[in-house]
Length: 217
Picture 1 (cartoon, one colour):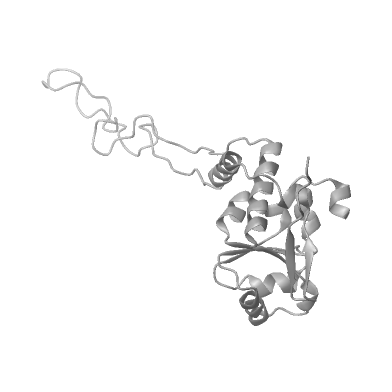
Picture 2 (picture 1 turned 30 degrees about the horizontal axis):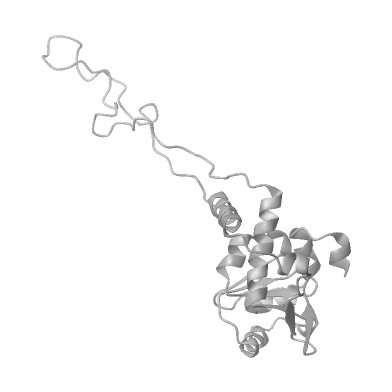
């Protein structure tokens, strides 16, 4: 079986060079159904689930019987807060709920690898050298993206220790800065281009399921 050719990504902000990306993460077959399943689960998990309504037991008022039981000619009624009354409660009201769905770890990793591989195949992934950002500079980050010339929206993956790099990119329009631990498939699919810091790359590989030996290489 032929070995897949390792895709390459440019390094921005430092010496002009290209690095080879791990084939087990950036050169795998994209499986749309796994990506769809994972993105749907991530978006559902982000839903608040706070929609609700009051049943007859939670609506204010209605304590007194509106009229006596017999002799009025009207149907008997015990409260004005029954569902068929104006101002009454809701029958079987919706309440707090969770929309989270379970997705197996292997499926999540396969979906993440597929999304990353799609960027690598289209040449929309690059690395960034954070040593060039000694201090936060939105202007320098904007110039870096202009030099690269890729379309927005953009997802930037950086470690929490790279504070100057994070602050440089987070004020740019249509740019999402995230950490490797919070990187989601939905964000990778949403982005037209992907930028990963050199320090964050091993963590992204580990999140995608690459072995320790592959990450070290």
